[in-house]
Image 1 (tube, rainbow, N blue to C red):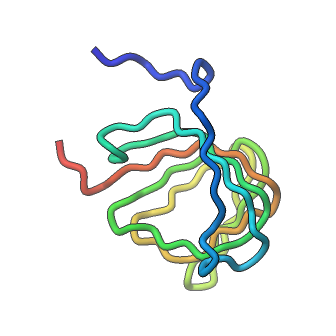
Image 2: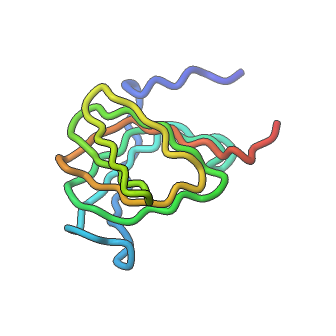
Length: 122
């Protein structure tokens, strides 16, 4: 029988990375991920993500959606059509599968994230 996963009762090891150089547009932000839950090898995962200011191009896989809610800080998403959306503390958004644009961290951000493989079948 599966158990409830409480983020506050876990201490996953952090994973550190930076944007790939060919996608980097500004800065070289350190990104830290604490993955609290992973089902079926990444078919559904969630946790906490923190990132320093910077900007890079993003291209989401055609089968991956991400929901996120900002805990602190501020980000700006740039769509290919030029529309920008700012998201701050307490606000949430979805980056849909296949999205192409830019992810800009305006102030060091910490967010909850949920990534779903939308090609998943049960």
